[in-house]
Image (cartoon, rainbow, N blue to C red; front, side):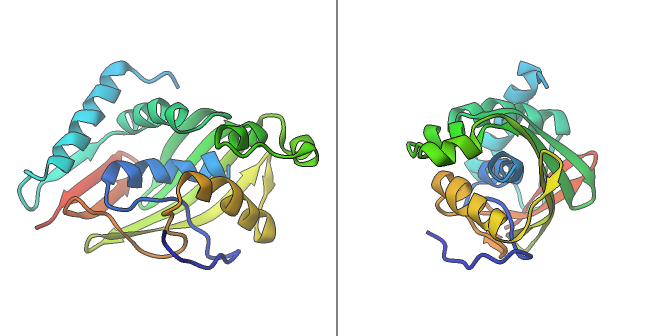
Length: 207
């Protein structure tokens, strides 16, 4: 398990140790944890690209293009397999290095799906669906990436400090115990860089 200290102004999302698909999914799990109808062809396409990357046979300098529709197809397919309590997860690539994730989340149901049902008082506080939005900056080079949270909103209210720390400790980490928070993590699979742009994400393969 990666060791880290949580700071209100230095919080980042998700676990991505060694797998590009975990790296990309984790970008969207920021809203899903702190926080449509894609075509089946998009999911099949992105799955083939992930398999190709992980097979390790791509030449150095190869570039794999992941479109927004492919990424959203993957997120929509994978999120229900990881946890309950999350609906309509959506990723929007806003500008270079910046993405926004949104979802509708029932935090009490999320805890139950993790095998940690909240007590009576916490159930009263957490039950009910809430719109969640997170904006994050994704920087990467030399086989490492860092994801920094720029803003987090639940039901239109911006979160920071201890409230955000609580969500990471009790909702993110139980699902992603290897989460790297606020510091660089290895991309793995010979991935040199993830180039995030509004048109999509380019995966650059290194040596």
